[in-house]
Length: 176
Image (tube, rainbow, N blue to C red):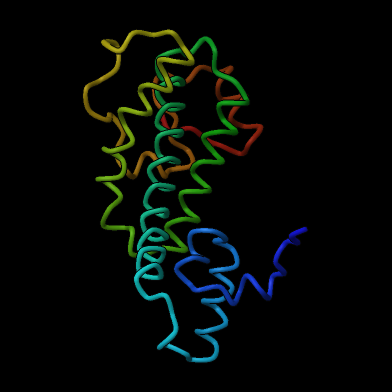
Protein backbone atom coordinates (compact mmCIF):
# COMPACT_ATOMS: atom_id res chain seq x y z
CA UNK A 1 0.00 0.00 0.00
CA UNK A 2 1.51 3.34 -1.02
CA UNK A 3 1.41 6.38 1.17
CA UNK A 4 1.41 9.97 0.12
CA UNK A 5 4.87 11.50 0.11
CA UNK A 6 5.44 14.03 2.86
CA UNK A 7 6.15 17.67 2.09
CA UNK A 8 9.79 17.06 2.93
CA UNK A 9 9.91 14.12 0.48
CA UNK A 10 8.29 16.27 -2.22
CA UNK A 11 10.83 19.02 -1.55
CA UNK A 12 13.61 16.53 -2.30
CA UNK A 13 12.28 15.50 -5.70
CA UNK A 14 14.30 16.66 -8.70
CA UNK A 15 13.34 20.29 -9.29
CA UNK A 16 12.08 19.75 -12.83
CA UNK A 17 9.70 17.02 -11.60
CA UNK A 18 8.64 19.15 -8.67
CA UNK A 19 7.84 22.09 -10.96
CA UNK A 20 5.53 19.88 -13.04
CA UNK A 21 3.96 17.87 -10.23
CA UNK A 22 3.73 20.17 -7.20
CA UNK A 23 4.16 23.83 -8.06
CA UNK A 24 3.73 25.02 -4.49
CA UNK A 25 6.45 22.69 -3.23
CA UNK A 26 8.66 23.86 -6.10
CA UNK A 27 8.18 27.52 -5.06
CA UNK A 28 9.05 26.69 -1.46
CA UNK A 29 12.18 24.83 -2.57
CA UNK A 30 13.22 27.82 -4.68
CA UNK A 31 12.75 30.14 -1.70
CA UNK A 32 14.82 27.80 0.45
CA UNK A 33 17.61 27.66 -2.13
CA UNK A 34 17.57 31.44 -2.57
CA UNK A 35 17.77 32.02 1.18
CA UNK A 36 20.71 29.64 1.34
CA UNK A 37 22.27 31.49 -1.64
CA UNK A 38 22.48 28.07 -3.33
CA UNK A 39 22.41 29.48 -6.86
CA UNK A 40 23.85 26.31 -8.34
CA UNK A 41 20.78 24.21 -7.46
CA UNK A 42 18.10 26.73 -8.43
CA UNK A 43 15.75 25.86 -11.26
CA UNK A 44 16.86 28.94 -13.22
CA UNK A 45 14.87 28.37 -16.42
CA UNK A 46 11.57 27.93 -14.64
CA UNK A 47 12.35 30.79 -12.25
CA UNK A 48 12.92 33.11 -15.21
CA UNK A 49 9.63 31.99 -16.75
CA UNK A 50 7.72 32.51 -13.49
CA UNK A 51 9.20 35.95 -12.76
CA UNK A 52 8.46 37.06 -16.31
CA UNK A 53 4.92 35.77 -15.89
CA UNK A 54 4.47 37.81 -12.69
CA UNK A 55 5.29 41.01 -14.59
CA UNK A 56 2.84 40.14 -17.33
CA UNK A 57 0.20 39.40 -14.71
CA UNK A 58 0.43 42.98 -13.39
CA UNK A 59 -0.13 44.33 -16.91
CA UNK A 60 -3.09 41.99 -17.43
CA UNK A 61 -4.59 43.10 -14.11
CA UNK A 62 -4.31 46.74 -15.17
CA UNK A 63 -5.96 46.04 -18.52
CA UNK A 64 -8.72 44.02 -16.82
CA UNK A 65 -9.49 46.83 -14.37
CA UNK A 66 -9.54 49.31 -17.23
CA UNK A 67 -11.93 47.09 -19.18
CA UNK A 68 -14.37 47.10 -16.29
CA UNK A 69 -14.21 50.84 -15.66
CA UNK A 70 -14.49 51.69 -19.36
CA UNK A 71 -17.47 49.36 -19.71
CA UNK A 72 -19.19 51.05 -16.78
CA UNK A 73 -18.37 54.55 -17.99
CA UNK A 74 -19.92 53.62 -21.34
CA UNK A 75 -23.00 52.22 -19.60
CA UNK A 76 -23.24 55.42 -17.54
CA UNK A 77 -22.97 57.58 -20.64
CA UNK A 78 -25.14 55.59 -23.04
CA UNK A 79 -27.80 54.26 -20.72
CA UNK A 80 -28.47 57.16 -18.32
CA UNK A 81 -31.92 55.93 -17.33
CA UNK A 82 -30.34 52.92 -15.57
CA UNK A 83 -27.65 54.75 -13.61
CA UNK A 84 -27.29 53.22 -10.17
CA UNK A 85 -25.30 53.06 -6.97
CA UNK A 86 -23.93 49.76 -8.18
CA UNK A 87 -22.38 51.40 -11.24
CA UNK A 88 -20.91 54.17 -9.11
CA UNK A 89 -19.45 51.64 -6.66
CA UNK A 90 -17.93 49.64 -9.51
CA UNK A 91 -16.39 52.74 -11.11
CA UNK A 92 -15.01 53.89 -7.74
CA UNK A 93 -13.63 50.45 -6.95
CA UNK A 94 -11.90 50.13 -10.31
CA UNK A 95 -10.39 53.63 -9.98
CA UNK A 96 -9.04 52.69 -6.55
CA UNK A 97 -7.66 49.38 -7.75
CA UNK A 98 -6.01 50.99 -10.79
CA UNK A 99 -4.45 53.62 -8.51
CA UNK A 100 -3.13 50.83 -6.27
CA UNK A 101 -1.69 48.88 -9.20
CA UNK A 102 0.12 51.97 -10.47
CA UNK A 103 1.33 52.92 -6.98
CA UNK A 104 2.73 49.41 -6.49
CA UNK A 105 4.09 49.21 -10.06
CA UNK A 106 5.15 52.73 -11.12
CA UNK A 107 7.02 51.32 -14.12
CA UNK A 108 3.59 50.62 -15.70
CA UNK A 109 2.96 54.38 -16.12
CA UNK A 110 4.37 54.53 -19.67
CA UNK A 111 2.00 51.68 -20.59
CA UNK A 112 -1.21 53.42 -19.40
CA UNK A 113 -2.48 54.71 -22.75
CA UNK A 114 -1.67 51.41 -24.46
CA UNK A 115 -3.46 49.56 -21.66
CA UNK A 116 -6.50 51.84 -22.05
CA UNK A 117 -6.57 51.18 -25.79
CA UNK A 118 -6.11 47.44 -25.26
CA UNK A 119 -9.00 47.40 -22.75
CA UNK A 120 -11.43 49.44 -24.82
CA UNK A 121 -12.88 46.72 -27.07
CA UNK A 122 -13.45 44.47 -24.06
CA UNK A 123 -15.05 47.39 -22.24
CA UNK A 124 -17.39 47.87 -25.20
CA UNK A 125 -18.24 44.16 -25.10
CA UNK A 126 -19.05 44.45 -21.40
CA UNK A 127 -21.31 47.44 -22.07
CA UNK A 128 -23.04 45.62 -24.95
CA UNK A 129 -23.59 42.49 -22.85
CA UNK A 130 -25.03 44.43 -19.93
CA UNK A 131 -27.13 46.98 -21.84
CA UNK A 132 -28.13 45.32 -25.10
CA UNK A 133 -27.02 48.45 -26.96
CA UNK A 134 -25.57 47.70 -30.41
CA UNK A 135 -21.86 48.00 -31.12
CA UNK A 136 -22.43 50.73 -33.73
CA UNK A 137 -23.58 53.15 -31.02
CA UNK A 138 -20.19 53.17 -29.28
CA UNK A 139 -17.19 55.12 -30.62
CA UNK A 140 -14.53 53.13 -32.48
CA UNK A 141 -11.82 54.51 -30.17
CA UNK A 142 -11.95 55.08 -26.43
CA UNK A 143 -13.62 58.47 -25.87
CA UNK A 144 -12.09 58.90 -22.42
CA UNK A 145 -8.63 60.26 -21.73
CA UNK A 146 -6.45 58.69 -19.09
CA UNK A 147 -6.99 61.79 -16.96
CA UNK A 148 -10.77 61.34 -17.15
CA UNK A 149 -10.60 57.64 -16.31
CA UNK A 150 -8.60 58.26 -13.14
CA UNK A 151 -10.50 61.42 -12.11
CA UNK A 152 -12.84 60.49 -9.22
CA UNK A 153 -15.29 63.24 -10.25
CA UNK A 154 -15.52 62.29 -13.93
CA UNK A 155 -18.78 60.71 -15.01
CA UNK A 156 -19.51 61.13 -18.74
CA UNK A 157 -22.67 62.41 -20.35
CA UNK A 158 -25.29 64.79 -19.10
CA UNK A 159 -25.63 64.76 -15.33
CA UNK A 160 -29.15 65.23 -13.96
CA UNK A 161 -30.10 66.52 -10.52
CA UNK A 162 -30.99 62.95 -9.62
CA UNK A 163 -27.49 61.83 -10.69
CA UNK A 164 -25.93 64.60 -8.60
CA UNK A 165 -27.89 63.39 -5.56
CA UNK A 166 -26.79 59.80 -6.20
CA UNK A 167 -23.14 60.80 -6.66
CA UNK A 168 -23.22 63.06 -3.59
CA UNK A 169 -23.85 59.99 -1.42
CA UNK A 170 -20.27 58.99 -2.30
CA UNK A 171 -18.86 62.50 -1.93
CA UNK A 172 -18.54 62.88 -5.70
CA UNK A 173 -18.95 66.30 -7.29
CA UNK A 174 -19.32 65.57 -10.99
CA UNK A 175 -17.66 67.96 -13.39
CA UNK A 176 -20.11 69.67 -15.69
